[in-house]
Image: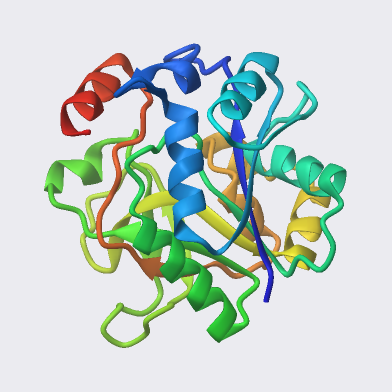
Amino acid sequence: MKTLIIIPSRMAASRLPGKPLLKINDLSIISHVFRKAQDANIGEVVVATEDQEIVDDVVKNGGRAILTSRNHKTGTDRVYEAVQKLEIKGVDLVMNLQGDEPAINIEDIVKLNKKMIINESKLGTLASKSKNLKDLENKNIVKVIIKKDFNKDQFPEAENFIRKTKKTKNIYNHIGVYCYSTQTLEKFVKFNQSKNEIKNKLEQLRALDNDISINVALAKSSPIGVDTEEDYLALKKIM
């Protein structure tokens, strides 16, 4: 099966504008993510962005990038436009990798891709064990509730995605990586944003609200996403 990795990215982040081009070890965050995706070696990698300066940076660092519309409401809509523009033949799976997670584990990318192929899934994502009970109350850390525990099912279905909870059973921290079958991606972007999605600012709820099941693979670790200045400084220290 043929997989294509698309990394949506834009300069206009509400909490940390310009973050894709912030440098860690003399390389921009977006180019770090591109290299991680390439090292996973599961298929072609392309950055999809509305900003010419991101295209220039990625290309300068040996990557491939494509300009997309400024009018997308979600990253998945941007991913779909890129897939259409690229016209790469024979793609079965499209992986949507977040452009602000330069510490993503390569093995987790490979694992998700394998699970999608073995299980012939329509849509898959990643989750990790929570190391801190405070995470449950932190609305900036998205949680996924799975239907069966990972001990009983290695690629269980998601029951729901939430921002805050007091429950602890079958709840994991969600990692915003998605892998779609091409048909599911096409179907997904044709649906209007659901009320649930808009209210919680979680686009994966659009899938669940339209009866598209989402399978979840257990990741080795939860990468730090760069949403704030603090995240950036913490990641710089780690990397």
